[in-house]
View 1 (cartoon, rainbow, N blue to C red):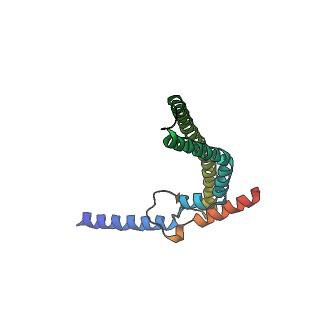
View 2: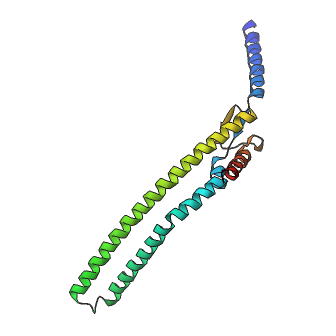
View 3: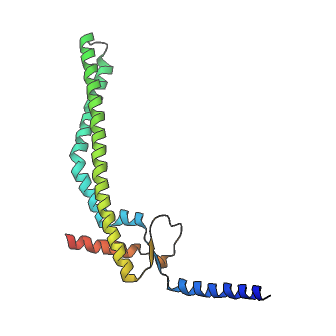
Length: 172
């Protein structure tokens, strides 16, 4: 009987200690996807990348149109062309298609590399802002990805976005 009473007392004391510790433990949540979509820095990155790669993109589109015109010409005029002309046009189409494929691959790789570099810089900045807000708000833990549900009371996303907007205004 003494053992069960001690067990119950131990469980009761443990639950009181846990409740007291939980009352002092402060958790915050930041929706990283929302920050990466809505921050002014993310929009700035998107605009800069579009501007940087726009000329190459337009060039690829023009080359694809030229290739399509040659393919149409081949399909339309192949019957009236000499064998030598048809072979020359076919080789030209094949070479252009190969070059276009290579150019598209290089374009995608370059664009992805630049986007990843810019996003990583932004993620470092967001991490700094989240840490600053965590210290200011005296938050013990701030969670980002993989949170299935959180109460708006612990959501720090708006504060992070506001701070990033302030930083964007001061950096201009």
